[in-house]
Image (cartoon, rainbow, N blue to C red; front, side, top):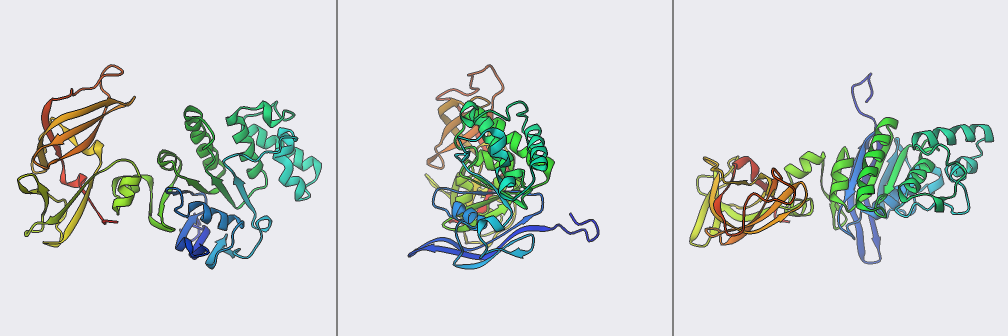
Length: 366
């Protein structure tokens, strides 16, 4: 944040960037702005263009069109070593024949930094990643998490303008991956370094980022804070890719304040939070954790349902319920409130299923 003007500095900017491989368009007219000190995640399935975008920022690929600016300077045609970036790969890419200290200090050595300053900065990194006393060890003697920290330190020691993380936790097991999410996020915040993260892991993107950019077919479909992206998806793709969602397709009722959903015995009116164009098609997304069980939602949507599936998933229970009037099944999540392994509702149990109008979010059909 610029204290004099009250504005936020733009550290990374991609404008109308395109990249094709033959007849295949990998990235299409992509625009992205990352503010100084932010961590932005590019999230999407394989083939969506997120890795190609990262490689263009890094300089490993050149865009067919568009502009890439780092700190306000155009870098689209610059080679990687002239962009002042740090990059951490999924496989760490550590030199097996070099010690931890040599790996961390490699970039400084290539830049011609003197031995004394290099040793000082390497030691600072060892302190930061909490690997004091392991400077002379080789990567093969380190755990996966420790190797990841060394790779991160090697990228940070050169004081890069932007840090690029390419699926950095993909090679770790679940428990270690979760702890490293906290470590990397904490380190990024302490240093205030601008970071672009590529991941296909929804939990990783939500837990580590200031903003999440959801990509599909070479485009950013939606970008916003993790809460905004999850709670207010703008498209069916975002709603279904980022977590689980119950999707309803209907049309707005003549009065404009409810949506008519197809049911087993005819259309069923469900209240909307905001008025919509009468007669227009409408797609709604309702998150499983927003659905109430055993409660009447008053003026909201209310249905009789029967439990057809109940699974314990650690800190919550997942239910599958048949809703006869809708002629379909819905998914509902409930926070665990009993003994480990217990579920509150049993197979065959009949109860009320409901949700408030504010929890039915209109989304585009694509």
